Figure 1: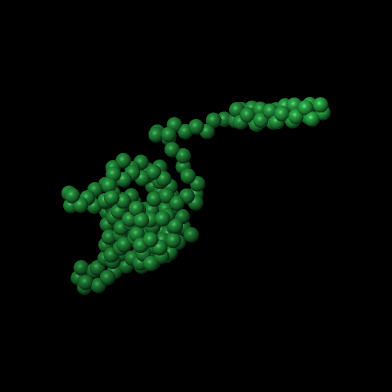
Figure 2: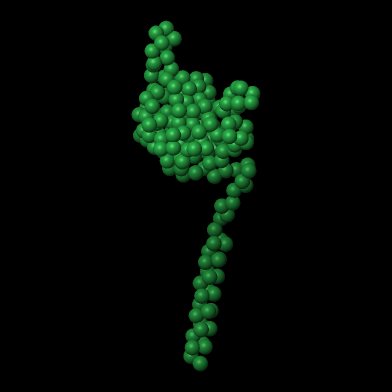
Length: 172
């Protein structure tokens, strides 16, 4: 008989604890985001899509050597008069389909601010394999362009929604 009442008391006590948690949560403000039009900004250490700044890059190849998935390629610019390589990049490409977002390329970059960095963008839209390979040349913006093999020209990626127009860059 005592076990019967003890079981009733334990059940009632558990139900009160559950209801207390429910009422505490119910009184907190809502954190709902109207998704397509509003987006949450990720935390500082988030590893989003890789972006590149051709003006800052000194073409040292350290990011290429540090990449474990071999998704980064670059070519040094050459002086038109002498034909010698200079400390600027002619073109730079990152295959985002191969990238594992390990941040080793960013850590290896010796420039301040970093020439290659992870943005806060967590949504990338790819309609075909060509769009996964982003290329940068002089005059391209941070997001880069992709080379459309059918039309034989560089195109800006469609459907990519950026969280910020200018990404936060850290000087380490």
